[in-house]
Every structure is written in C-alpha cells, then in structure tokens.
Length: 294
Image 1 (tube, helix red, strand yellow):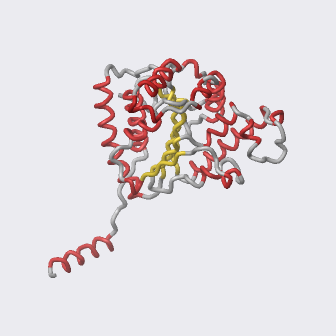
Image 2 (tube, rainbow, N blue to C red):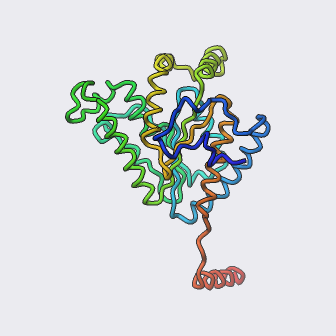
Image 3 (cartoon, rainbow, N blue to C red):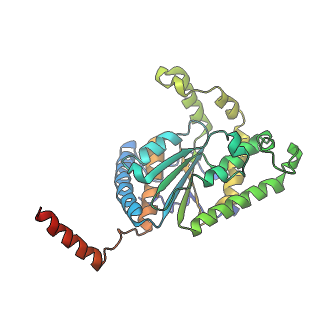
C-alpha cells in the first residue's frame, strides 16, 4: 500500500493547496484498524533496519516535523512510529514557549540548534512553524520578540509574514543541500474529534492529567488556526521539503500512514553500510589470528 506519493496526503506545490479539500477521516484504502496495525508493525521493522544503515553511513540526516492542533496525537504518533529505533541515532525535540535566551535570537535559532546531525533521525514535536501559526493567531507574541521596526501589531502585516515564509524556505533549502531530508507532517484532526478527545480527558480519570483549560481558548480560535495552517503550507510546500496532510481522526490509521511514509523515504535514500577496503580486511584477518591465539 502506497502512501508516500498519495495525492490526498502529499503537498509539494502550495500554489493550488486547499486545506478544506483534505478530509480528516480519509483512510487511503485501509479498511480496518487490524490492517493498519499490521502495516504499522511492518513499517516499524523497516525503519529500524534503515536507521541502522543511516547511522552507519553517516552522510544523511532525517528531520521529521510534526504540527497539529491540540489532541491530534503528536506524542503517541512519534512514540508508535519510531518504537524500537536505536536511541543513539534518534532525538526528539519538543518546542514550548521560547525562553528569554531564545527570544534574544532570531526565530529560527533554537530550531537550528536542534537539527539532527548526519546519521541521525531528528523529530520536531512542534517546530519553527509555530512562528507562523500560533504567532499569526496571536500577533502579540511577535511583539515580545523585540524585533526592530515591529513596534505594534499594525507592523505585523502581510509583508512580515511573507518574509517569515521566505526565511523558512531558505533555511530548509540550506539544510537539504547539506544532506538533511525533511518530512513535514500536519496531523489533521477534525473539530468534532478534538471535542470528543477533550471530553475524554475530562471524563476519564486516567486522562485528567492531559487536560489544560488553555486548550479551550485555542479551540475557540479554530478558524484562525485553519487559516494559518492554510497559509503556512501553501507558502512552504516544495518537492524537496514536502508537507503530508495526515488525517488524524483515527489514530492507528494515522500512525500507520506516517510510519510507512518515513520507512519508504528511508528506503529511497538507498542507504548502504560503509564498504570495507582491502586494508581493513587485512587488519580484521590479523585481529582474528591474534584473538584465536590468546
């Protein structure tokens, strides 16, 4: 089953992108959760196998960016997609509200510091895209960044956002040219499904810890967030840094899609273990003799 190039998931040209055309319950041919679990397990094994070669070859990095509305399932997706990978070659960075130190730098600074090195898989749980999502919904956050020439919300205009999109595109292109493969996932949960998950967090004691009343305030801004996602994806999707709009109403199907996209992307790099030269072969033969004669 192919998800990597599914036109209902993949966005490589933002000029014709319309988020409203992407349903939150699309299954891409998956007919049951049992089938989704089998596909997920198979992809887990492939990711594990390819990660070992990625780490050994040490010439590419993979960066997976996850963005979503609250309760879409980012944490569980990251956990279930990358289960079993070698922790030595894997890193998750979760971006919260920026610190004073982070605010004293440009908006990409903290993300640039977290970019995975060659041989690594890096995960951004939220990312640099917060700067054109939550900051666009709450422009007052931009004022707190002390940017020269941005003295009021009136200064945060369409030209300001166009500059930010351009900065993101240029930064991602720089990473790509230096060996980083970028996959961007928007976990697209429906508003009704988010409501059901919020209610479950309130009604089920074991989920109470997940509930944050602040999420209700953000939920009330749903149309603004959808417009912000529309603009962000439209302005930053490209062939080399694609977005995948993953339907998130069914978590197992969502996780299966993401896992298979990651697995197929790794396979397409055509990774191999480093070749061993004649000198190394001779040294191993000598080492074997030494060990056998101990």
